[in-house]
Image (cartoon, rainbow, N blue to C red; front, side):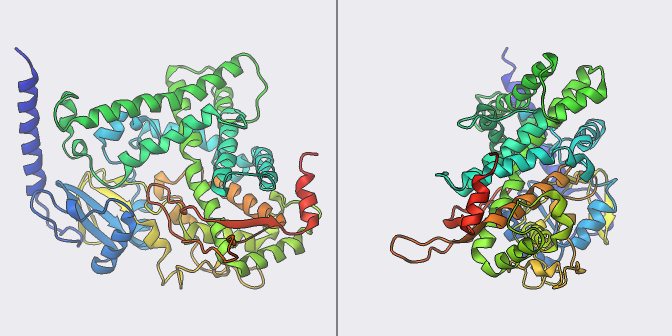
Length: 511
């Protein structure tokens, strides 16, 4: 007798019991946080937008406060719309709120539970963070990668004199080249690099399974036992394809580096080689952790940095007075005989302020990756149930008009005085790189890359609005994409050398 009817009946029974249990809920004395009223059984499923979730979350924050409760098919979700709540919950009570939501779709079926971005909090995730920290976790550890970062940024400057495709593509190629080299010691091919193309596919996997919407199997995990041919079980075929791609992303570049190390090929400093050297004898478990730790750096680490760099170009296009002040600082400190270096950073406070304002004005990740409550808790007088998904609305936090007056205006001077002294305005770093034990382990690398990129391009190029064939100025829309990392929509701009001397300096690169 076929087992399919038994499986289907079992799934249906579990689904009903699970749904009833979630709807009826557990007994508790404190109220849930306020939020929009949902419908019976399905909750706020129809209130959730399909994109730009942070906009709706911000509106809810204005109506219900800085901690908002919603539920989808009985799954509780807590949205934090203020720095006060995010810090109090995710930083100060990180022992409770450092886990990731259980995801049968992304975690189990696709296999992302092994990748730090979605891994449960525990020994494996701590081991991954240890490997990343020893290579990228501190400003000191980043210094050994300065040469690679500067080398690729110099290539980028020179590419802008040629017939490049568009600025976003060139930024992406540059950052990808840096990440592959510092992770695997791998040098990309100039055209159609297959390893880079493979890395880019990770976003196609992460976005649909991490975004704050719910696959039915995430709401009712028992559905993962349905046969793939069953109506409504198409998610299993989707997951199987994603899983194959994910393992290629993880395995291919790692095996290439492992083979080069075995053949004593001389490689630049990179995460995989450093892990092998420090571990000595690498057993099966260590090798598994090393390759998964490396994958999140090279495949997932660059998207937010690329977004920030692209936002910088947009900001300079829209705010020419900011650009002029930054270039005046560079000319005073460095002159026009050389390009900026990392050693100049402490003497360039306005460039430093630009980096902060980029991350605040158009934060690359408008929503913090979701956390999960490890147990029932009372927070600020409200009940937070075990298993609740916690999402910090980074966009709302960094556009709080009380902390950042005129938040929609790009204004680096909010972070630095006319004399170059830092102000008491909150740094956006505490929000845009995450909270508590889930803070981004590559934040120091991102900060270093964005700083030197901004300084170097401003030293030799002017960025302005493009002019059409009809002689009219082309205004950028200023709109952004939705997703885990939000990028500017394509826009035209003019990027030309500041002077003939600047052009000669660019041409002299690598001569």
